[in-house]
Image 1 (cartoon, rainbow, N blue to C red):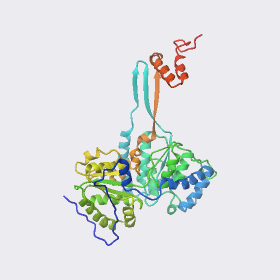
Image 2 (image 1 turned 180 degrees about the vertical axis):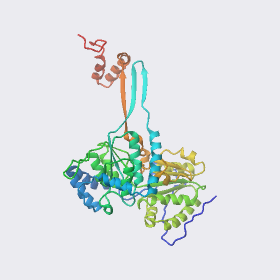
Image 3 (image 1 turned 45 degrees about the horizontal axis):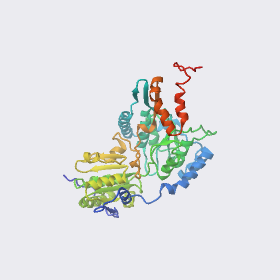
Image 4 (image 1 turned 30 degrees about the vertical axis):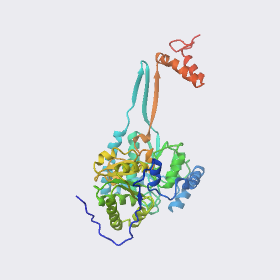
Length: 464
C-alpha cells in the first residue's frame, strides 16, 4: 500500500537536493568516505583558534570572563551564572501539564533502558589463589551540556541526566545558554526538566565557555560560589562546543564530539516516499547545516522523495531553514547499484541516525557496522528516538560513529581492575615474569618478584 502525502502544493522555491551517483563505481572505503555528502563549511580546525581564546579567558578570569561572554554572545548581563533553586521550582510549577506528562514518560523509558545497560562486575579465577576482578565504578562528578540556539531541548536534559543517575554519579552539574527573553536564565522548559530529575546545580552558560568552566572549574567570587571541575563532560552542541570538547579531552572524559544533527536513510523501492521525506525534513528543521541523506538503489524512489520534499518543505513551519539544510552540500541522494553497495555507503557515512526502510529491514540493520543509532522499519522514525524510544539521542556525528558510541551508562563509569594473588599463585608465574622482564631489559621488574621468595619468611615478614 502506498501512503499518499496530505501536504498541499504550495508555491515555493524547490529544494535543491543534490545527487551523488555511485553506480558502476568500485570504490574503496576511503573513496566512499570522500564521495558521500558532507558539510563543506566551518570545521573543528577552523573554530579552534576562537575556542582556545574563549577557554583561555575562562581559565584566567573565571566568572568575569563568563559574564563578558554572556553579554557578547547572548546579550545578557550576568553577575553569577548559577540558577537560583527558586527559579527551577517555579519553572516546574508553571510547566504545561501535557509537556510534563510527555517528559515523565520519556524519563521512565530512558531509565528502564539505562538501568539495563549497566555492566556487571566480574571475578575471574585463573588458578588457586589467582583472582583478577573488574569492577565498574561511577565517576564522582559530571558536567552536562544542553544546547540552546534555534530550538529548545528539554529532551537533551533527560538524555544526559538519566544515564548519569543510572551509573550512580553523585554530583551532577548542568549548563545551558542564558536567554535574554527569560531574564538571563536558560529556557524555563530546560529548567523544569532539570527540576523534574532532581538536578539543582544548573548554570546559565553556553557554548565553548561552558565546556571550559566544567573542565577547569571556576573559583568563587563575591557574587557566588565556585563551580567545581568535573570528571566527564557530555552533551551535544554546535561546532564550537564540539571543538571545546575535543580540546579538553584528556583533562576530562567526553562522550563524543556531537555536532550538528544528521540523518541517513537506506531505502529500496518498497519504501514509502512521504515517510522518507518526512523523516529527512524532521532532522533538517534542527539547523540550516543539518544533514539529510537518502541512500537508495531506486531512481523512482529518489524522484518520488524529491517531489515530496518540495511539497512537505513548503508546508512545514521552519520552511526556509529546512530548504537550506536540504539544499546544502551535506544533504542529497546517494544512488547505489544494489543493497550491498548501499550498506557499504552507510558504513562509510557512519550516520548519527540511520533509518532502514527496506525489505527485511531488521536483517539489513543487523549488517550495519557504523551508526550512532539504527531505526528499523516504517514505525521507528528518528523522532521516536529523539523523545520517547528509551534510547539516547546524544550520538556521534560527522562520521565519528565509526569509532564512537552514543551516550550511555558506561560513559559515566570506569572499569577498575583488581589483582589479588597468593604467594603460591605468584610463585607459579614468577619464572615467566623474570623471563619477560629480561627480554624487555627491565630486570628490576623480575627482581621485585624474586625478592618475595628470597630472604623473606613464608608469613610475609622480613627474614634475616
